[in-house]
Image 1 (spheres, rainbow, N blue to C red):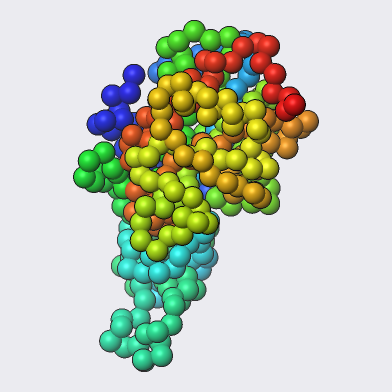
Image 2: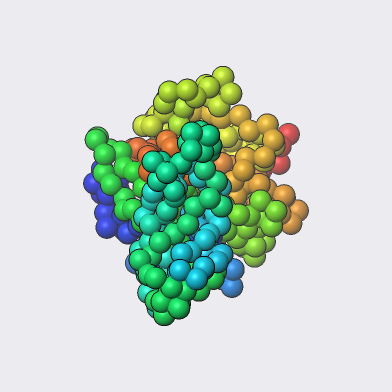
Length: 360
């Protein structure tokens, strides 16, 4: 069952450490797929790169449970004559957290390690020291002396990169990783599927590790294509949200959400009212702590890509409180993963063939 939650298994750590920036999710998806194959009734990957795992594929209703498996990263845009690499962000970065980082470049000939360079503070003029760095001010040094040497090492324009840091265990049940957003969502939906598979249900439960959420604002990313193909009767999305238990965060704007405080249930235009109420009722019946977050416009998650697909999909959003989002050291509580998976399983197991999501 959930031995991984109190003491993370190799699967969780391996999933978080696998590099998989948006558009280049293959390695992370492979880790997820291999784990799914150990218990799911069927596992498959579509042409967009979304990976899905099913329990009771002929059941009804069909429940889609989505967590995006991509992470933010970088991409090589240019190599100069000295072999220095210039790059752009894949997804939203605060450039201040990029300065001085090590990066892992995913080339066709294998991985290369580079360091992010910037003019030393000793050499900066006083006005430069006060200037906020931009990604365009930075470069990557892989230790070569020419463009030809960089090319011989396998580097090409367009190669993706991630910050080169592994998951670490913090005090208590907390962990830190560069890929919390939203590799833990993909993890939770698969663990929920495992729980559902251990029970008896009329539903067809489908866990989906979606791609390109971090850059999918216009296209809808992999959640749009996978939900279109699956035709779910109801969908649950698992992502992260801002943990507001740190200094200088306004609870008046974001709500009161803390690490270990349980999953966060969204309410708003992209969240179906019947799904929300059933999630809240399931949490209360299972004694699962939770908080509520208002989402008056878009949720900025895969839920936005699913709920208006085809004729409309009743959609719920469950979020994991996350500190230091979009940084090399995001932080969560493992208890929140446990409770999110339990909540999803309880929701799905409470459905029947005649469950009606029409809001009345």
